[in-house]
Length: 236
Image (cartoon, rainbow, N blue to C red; front, top):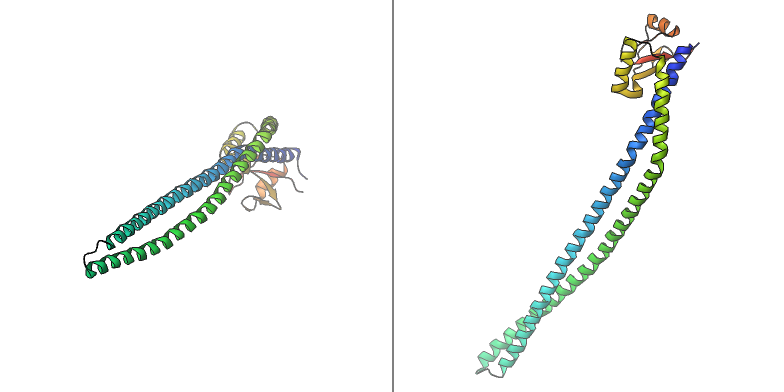
């Protein structure tokens, strides 16, 4: 059966695992906020980029509209010149110029209509992006509120567990055993300890030597000869 010492080791291992979980949850809170804020920043940038795109599209459409007005004004000028034509040849030349301008205006009008339609589509996309910004802002606030609400309880739990761990660590034998445990705790945390299941280290699945099995049965401090973890036995 498990000795009092091995049960104490098991209790210490459980406390270390609980402490790690609580510390992870406390540290995970700011990471959750940072991740949400990053998504918000990306959404805001996408919205800003879309606004800039729309401005450029409108500018291009305005330039095309101005160009159309200029050509329409040219048509009016050429039409006024028709009455001043000194010959049929000149009249024909001016008429060709007018027709060319009209054709150009018709093509430009079509292009402007397409541009304005594209602006409308881009505006719809902007609304979607702006809604995404609003949604992300809400998520950031919700996560911040959730993290703030849980933080006091987590800190209180960590402080309690740290005290219990310190008390439970008194089971560690003085000297090399305690030093080895402290080194493992600093480098591996809770995973620096491992229970023995059916004669095997639960972490590295290496069989415990007969000599170490006897030591474990007697509740002595023992390290896994393969992975170096502190071993404890709780089975029969």
